Amino acid sequence: MWVFGDSATMEKRVMTDSKRRRGLSVASALLGGVLVLSACSGGGDDDPQGEGDGSSQSKVDEAAAKKTSEAQIKITPKDGSDNASINSAAAVTVTKGTLSEVTMKTADGAAVKGEISADKKSWKPSGQLERATAYKIAATAEDSDGRAAHENASFTTVSPANSFIGNFTPEDGSTVGVGMPVSINFDKAITNKADVQKGITVSSTSGQEVVGHWFNANRLDFRPEDYWKGNSTVTLKLNLDGVEGASGVYGVQQKTVTFKIGRNQVSIVDAETKTMKVTQDGKTIRTIPISAGSPENKTYEGRMVISEKFTETRMNGATVGFTDDDGKGEYDIKDVPHAMRLSNSGTFIHGNYWGAKSIFGSVNTSHGCVGLADTKGAGDTNSPGGWFYSHSIVGDVVDVRNTGDKTVAPDNGLNGWNLDWAAWKAGSAA
Image (cartoon, rainbow, N blue to C red):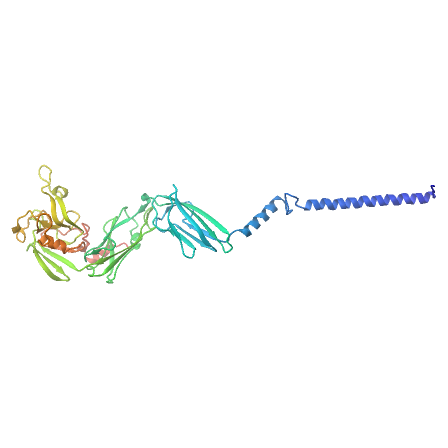
C-alpha cells in the first residue's frame, strides 16, 4: 500500500536525492581526474621513467656511463697523423687499467710484432717501422672491475722524400786506427745544421774533446784536436728521430754506435828520401823503401787516413784522368796487390810487382800513389807491400811529406787532420 505524505515532505526528498546524485557525479569527476592525472604522470610501456623522450634518453646514457670501463687508453701518434717516426712514434699506454690486447697491422693486413710491458701499462712495436707505410692499431684494456675499453688509431710514417738519414763510418763494433774520424754523409742536404748537430754526440773514454765540422750541406765529421788515444773506446749517438734537417724533411735515426781505437800507428812517407818509417806509439818498428809520384805526377802531401783495404784490386788510369791519345787509360792493372785507399780521388798506398825492385828507395815513378815492392797474387806477406798491409788497419795515418805537391784537401777522403784545430772548430754549427 502506498502512503503519500504531504507535498513539503516529498519536495524535501527530491532535493535530497538530487544533491546525492550531484555529489556522486562530482566524486566521479574528481576520481576520473585523479585517474587521468595518474595516467599522464606514468611512463607507460614506452616511457617507464615518465620523463618524456629527451629525459628518458639522458637517464639511459647516464646509467650506461656509470657502467663503462674506467680504463683510459692513449695511442700515439694520434689518429690521422702523417710523417710519423719509424722509431719511437708508435706506442700504447693505459691509465686506470691494464692492457689485455694490442694489434698493429699495415694497411694491407701484415701484422707488426709488439710486446705488452710486464706491468701491462704500455705496448710498443718490437722493431723499426717502415717508411711511407700506413699502420692501424687496435687496443683493449680492462679496469679493476674487468670492464673493457677499446681504442683505435691509424697513422702513416714519414716518406723517404720527407726524411733523411746519415750514412756513417766507422762501423759499429769495429777496431780502427787513431786517425779515424766519425764521418757522416746525409742523403739530403741539411739546412738546419745546428739542430742536426745537436742531435749527434761523439765521446771517448779518453776524455778528449770532440768537435764536429761541416764540410758541406751533406757531410759532417767529428774528431778530437789530436789523434784518438790508443786503446780507447768511442761512442757515437744519433738522436735524430724527428729532427727537422731542412724544411719538411725529418730525421729517422735513433742509434748508438761504439768502436775501439787500436794501437797508435802512424807511417811517415818521405818522397825525398824515398822511405817510409812505420811507427807505433812513437817508436819506429820498420823502415820500408818506397816509390812515390813522379815529378810529373806528384803525390799529395799531408796526413791521410786509410779508408779502405783491398787484398787485390784493379787500377785503371782512365778513371782518374790518366788517358792516352786514344782515350784509353795510361795503365790498367787488374790485380794490384795489397792496396789501401788514402783519398777519394785515387791516391793509394799499394804493392807493386811490375816495377823493377831497384826503383824502391831510389826513384819516384808512380802516377801519384805510394808504391811498395810486392809479388803478383798478393800471397807474399813477407814482401814490403804484404807486410805493411798485414800490419795496417782502416784508420791508420800515412803522413806524406816532401813531394812538392799541394796538401790533400781535408774532405778528399777522411783527411780532416789537415785543418788546424781553430779552423776545424770554425766549421762547427753547434
